[in-house]
Amino acid sequence: MKACKTCELIANRDTGTAPLWDCIQRTSFWDVVHSYDTALPGWLVLVVRRHITAVAELTEAEAMELGLLIRRTSVALQEITGCVKTYVIQFAEKAEHPHVHFHIIPRMADQPENRHSTQIFGYLGVPAEERVSQEAMNAIAAKVRERLLAYASA
Image (cartoon, rainbow, N blue to C red; front, side, top):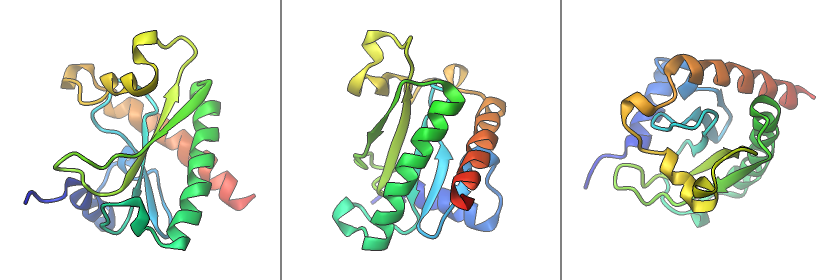
């Protein structure tokens, strides 16, 4: 069985060595990060901090915190990217990412029809030269972090 890449990324966050885009916010149960292999700026991922492979394994507390984060990250993305809505998707089926995580994806008003709905995944797993740069991910991450901190203190 392959090692869980998601658990490796969480371990990096635990040591404080993760870049801003990979450690936007850490809550008691979840990490908010920017997807690292996407061509779509603002593609966020909510990662449960303990290794589970099915949503039914979430505790009540994890599920309650997830609900708040889905809403708050969606509002932040609308404010920052101007998206008309966000898609919320959870599969956790990739061999290297069997760990429960939720994609929070901005759907832009001018997004091509062939990138609506599940076809949005055409923006994921793209070659390095098509990916959102680390600088751009960090800029988005800083804005999202600022908004999430403001929502939490309100």
